[in-house]
Length: 284
Image (tube, rainbow, N blue to C red):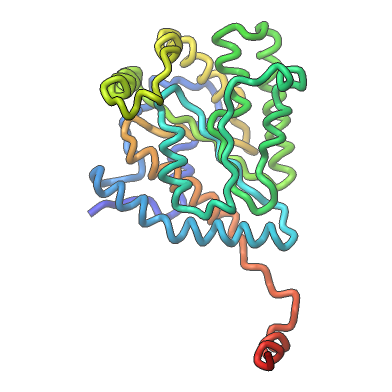
């Protein structure tokens, strides 16, 4: 029998402590907070569906009746870490009308001229919505740093700009849930090989992934810096062990569920007299 956390503690268990971050200390095959098999994990994920959907609808209704709260789920990770899989399996449990999913690619020249946070602001979830970012503003201290797209003084300033931006979002009613999908170098190699072996997955493969893979140590260093420097109380980081896809999907969805529980949105009260409307309806 699988046992999983239903007491709101996975947020505590996977949260990155303040201070220096050493990703080698995190086991990417861990199943923190879950006891059971792969099949158990898949069943447990499906079992979250009714509750997470209910909380999402409550938040959506709150937003439609004047509430200003929303949730922003940020997914970051190396290629093949499973950002799309989390969206497919986790977000698939929820009502699409309450979701806003944005996948960030390389910025266009016009976007670069406006500053690195401009396009992020355009994609933020409105009141009552759950926004999901497949990559995010963190690309500007990750690939921009590793690939030397901007000078070190520029990307160094961005950490504080990100902290100020996220604090601003929190003050405006956006709850930020930042998940780093942590996979091993060996697991990434297996997943890339699987894409090459399966013609139905060739569309997922990008020859540039090998070039990025060769920069693994530099990316690890960049991620460690981002997790350390942008880990304040308004928007902490969570490291999600992601070598096991089933666990990754369950863990991120559980964190989202626990976040919604803490927000505790309530059904808006009727702004009309219910009994009067019942009587009016009966006469039609």
